Length: 372
Ligand SMILES: Cc1cc2nc3c(=O)[nH]c(=O)nc-3n(C[C@H](O)[C@H](O)[C@H](O)COP(=O)(O)O)c2cc1C
Image 1 (spheres, rainbow, N blue to C red):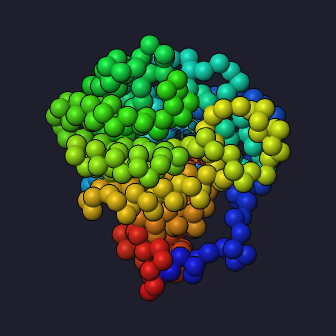
Image 2 (cartoon, protein in one colour):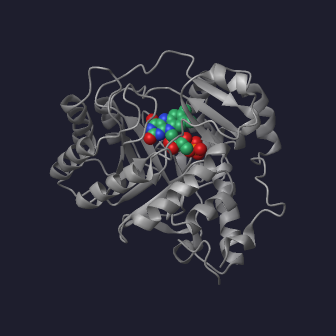
């Protein structure tokens, strides 16, 4: 079935839909500092969960990643629930799974503020939070005491400090892995693609190899391990990283992280420039993320799975990623513009697209460009 059968009528990217109640709330939230608005969202989420319309299940939306079953394919991307405070309530918003983190070996305040910026015209954000978080030990203890409402994954990154590099950086990631390896997690993601660190995205295959070898050694319960890659990776880097991933039994890829590029934005150039460095996410990232999925789908091992991520904010977006090779999707920035019931709406839209096409997730994966 060709993707064209479900394309929005005008062929244009449509604005992210949001219900009237959220549009009113959003105009208040957008008067707040973006990071304060996020802190408020984390505090309110457990209370709002009682009013939300999830969990969401539908036979045609059932999927699995690395053999782990999800009731639906819409996940929360890393960075929203960095410290694992929301695992008890995320299913109520319609999510099928969630990635907590990135966690780091040591607690960290992250980069100096301000470090999170909205590009409202583009329905995007730029962040250079720099991996702020309470640290792996604290988050692991919180997760051990939690009642998960959905399959939970944890994303591990290296502590962002100039002294933590080389051997120390590898030990830092392995420490985080040790903290969480006995928890009842769906999978673990190794983040090789955060642009907001002293070193930028990981470029060294040797370093990645050492991390993957160390993780493989510690992974006594055989928890599925995925690798999160950058849409800014060169084809050569992608090839070497995928080759390493295959060598060390990595079960799949999260594709992908934010981009440091700034092309094609509607927001005024001076305004974008004044925001400074950081990773861009949201609507303008979608084409790059989709391209990353297509590139990795071509070169990955057949039994490795892909989770698509970047600018997803509608059922059609999710469908495009699935048709390009993803078994599931994740989102973050869409929530800021579309509101907390966006996962439910994406699931409903995706379900109706699949039904119209007489498909399920399983039969839709990788069908882009093929005719019926
Ligand atoms: C404020 C913010 C913080 C983020 N923090 C992390 C992080 O800690 N670890 C990570 O792997 N990705 C992080 N991300 C990237 C997201 O997980 C996701 O890959 C990216 O935002 C693209 O998805 P989106 O367009 O739906 O937001 C962050 C994104 C944002 C906007």
